[in-house]
Length: 271
Image 1 (cartoon, rainbow, N blue to C red):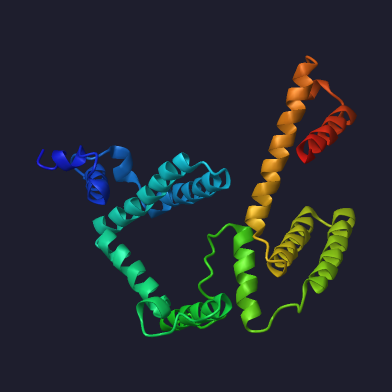
Image 2 (image 1 turned 120 degrees about the horizontal axis):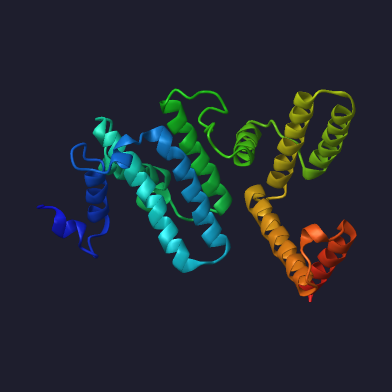
């Protein structure tokens, strides 16, 4: 086929990837699975690939990061091809759109504004530009445009940041800590006396306030929780190793035994 030289060119770059996706989606000669996909069926893979990028960065696995970024780029190409097939837009429109946005949001780099600004001032300017963009889209509410499909913890922080811009915020972290105590008590009360639906609601309230505490303390809650997950995994695997040295498995052990080994794993990490 006339396009085969590009398809098999190891240095074909982005044009090669775009042509591969076009061919995969070709209704006559493409891959049946790729042809059947739509925005909705591909979206979960897009989210998954973004998390795998974050995971590679967290582990400083740079060779893996290259591959994961490729997987994430493929998702953009896939969505753009679906859009092109429907006559909505194409990959060039996507690239031009983000380029226009970045130029507009950085007048201190691509325009006449001075670069002599603090990071804080640049952040305020960035938010002002984004607010103007939302207004142009008739998104007039403070919380308009915060994507519903974001991971819940990330969306909580974004919602709180938006509300804080108009003054709806506690003045400092001490007030948030007081609110956490209040929400924890309400959760305990719900657990003791109310339905499971109410328990879930109160648990959500507590998580929402915890996200607010992270924001006040300038902590990324997603990153903090990933770190806690990694630490738990590392220490529990150490428990398994120590038990294996005794010819045992976790299910053969008591909680007291595993707690003692957990403490040992913590001590070893601190050395």
